Image 1 (cartoon, rainbow over the protein chains, first blue to last red):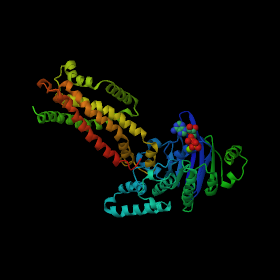
Image 2: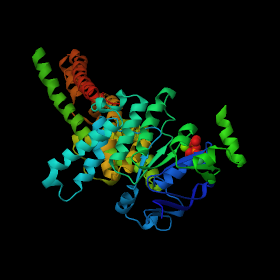
Image 3: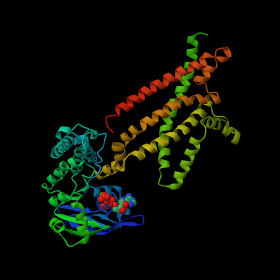
Image 4: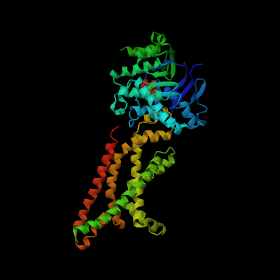
Length: 260
Length: 213
Ligand SMILES: Nc1ncnc2c1ncn2[C@@H]1O[C@H](COP(=O)(O)OP(=O)(O)OP(=O)(O)O)[C@@H](O)[C@H]1O
Ligand SMILES: [Mg+2]
């Protein structure tokens, strides 16, 4: 069984059906890229998987455990929903760092709030906070920003902000880390530093879903690629199958638009 | 009647003015938050009732509202008059809470949804997101427009003389019957000083919050 299994996902906004039945699975440690033209439903898919949006139909499991079932969402307690959502991390197109916290605090905040909910927090306070701090320093170092610990987001470049956002998402140890066009809000000269960080994560066997318009990058880092078109998966396969010439007309037309 | 006596008399008025100012703030901020939540409620009847109240309160003259709160209950229902200061305070709290609620609503709506979503994806509860992520950003956004309202509030306190609350202008004016007109104009100095201090304080707060954007 795969780590992530998405089954028959449907999502509409009002009368427009945006996802028309999505099925796929993803094995542990693998990287999945999602490509497709604007409006094809990539962001919506990611938001349904991460449960920022709830699908009207469908079923998602992580490690065999149901994390989403359209028929039972109404019955879930907030606590249970929160627990299930923590299976996923999300790196946003627009970073969404917390502006009032510096780099270190952005990474530690959620870990600290989580630690405070532990029954033994009071007794072990110093050790726990120390461990959180060390973990944050390690993560920030891994995205190459040790020099910027006490800088605020407004003092960082877009690329640096996105790297902090990646460290912040990793801090919660998600089973699956999702990216929604992580570089499309960046100036071209800043995309590479972010892509390099994401690439370094593949070596750590982190399971990832990456929505991207960077075709070369997708080809390089992915184990699987999904091509979305009009709310359905129009083609999927290995990077070679998708990028190495296929007989799918829609896919060829889409990839063709990138050659120019 | 010396200059010193005039100052002392007007200062008595300033105590009343300052009381009205601070008590209005104290009650209008929480009430404004409640009204703000009402005006953003998902339940549309609540939203419309609240929006109508805000429209009436903001759309009609404050001076008229003071008169209505003071005389209205007696004229309509034969109830005893409220103490003058209390009537003035009630009017100010309701009036300013409505203005504040719109400022808070603007502040809340100006915070990008991504902030809530980022918090949610990091496993925060709704209240953790509000208190740890949103609140300070909200404060930063509402301080400048609130500053404007506070300065207006200081000057609006002069209106309560219509129901004979002895505030600064009333006291200044009381010298006219002793043949002195200048103390009335001199009261401006007290408003300017009050607002001067307020402006400095607000500037300090803004500066404190200027480290992020
Ligand atoms: N909250 C929403 N309300 C209404 N319609 C929406 C909403 N979110 C997305 N849509 C619609 O759903 C469709 C798919 O949008 P989505 O953002 O998933 O596309 P996308 O593939 O991510 O596109 P892009 O490459 O431009 O980011 C679009 O037609 C969009 O207008
Ligand atoms: Mg998108």
